[in-house]
Length: 400
Image 1 (cartoon, rainbow, N blue to C red):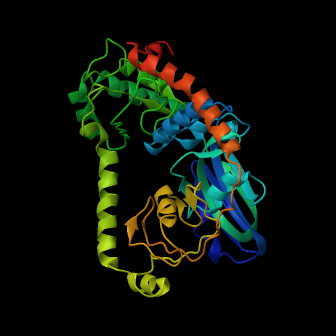
Image 2 (cartoon, rainbow, N blue to C red):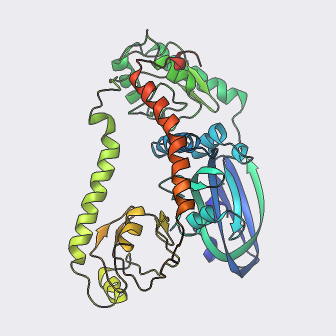
Image 3 (cartoon, rainbow, N blue to C red):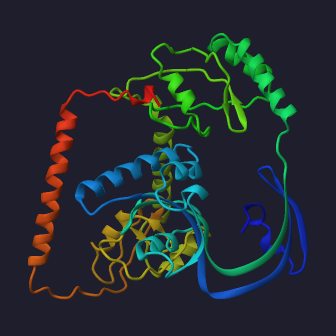
């Protein structure tokens, strides 16, 4: 479903013409040809796959890379650009887009993560499958309603004259900005200019906040001759924009400050305070959960989750929440937890049924598996210890 009509599609009438709508630099007109409901739910998602071999070292390295890229995306990097750079399968060139799919089309761990996610957006942790680790972005939540649309689209792009004028303005701004003070002063004079402040840029980053393909800017910022308050001596041309860059501050990697992580800390503190308020309002939940949810308000939902295993890291309709899974397995059948803060909200869990694990007569295969796993990990941890103990500085960012 095109993003520009998602909010309005439920009001469309079969056979009607709607638009024009704008999405980026493209204008569209749509005709709704048909609507029908299907018994099989569909969802749409994008992913970035980090392949891993069967060794513990390979698995750990793939997970490390996946978490590093996921942190960059959460900090503002473009998911699609990160997919093009880091993706290892055929979806990389399309920004990781997998299109629409139903259950049974993907491996079980992947589809469970997508179909149990509530809404759209990033799944909070990389998901492990037989192929490796996936960063998953749910772009369309599961639905059983199908729409058939016809579309006429027209894209509008900048002419050479427009690009020349933009470059002239950027060059003029640069020539009048000799330091950070004049940079900010000139920025205030022209409200049509767009400012983009990145609070933390690392030496190997390929982006500056939401500005992608910004490797040239990062290399300039980390050049030994570049200092705080410096303005770059050139205008950087990045796809469809011209950028004048300046360094506003610097810090030591081994001595992090609160200011450097203010946004992340602020978000965590706000979520913690919201959770405390909700838990305080809920109090002790007694009686049927449906009644408690109605009393709390429209945002409270009661969902039934089946086939939960101790190896699960997510729950259907809730999303990634390993703590909730742990609490479920800490309860006896029929018992109910107190309200607690999960990954995506405040939860109260109640165990309505359990299936005992079958008895195992011979544990030798599990013992052998653990010995094999720990044996392969030994080499990885040994190499990691040597690397951590060695005094090595990584200066590759200076060259590419």
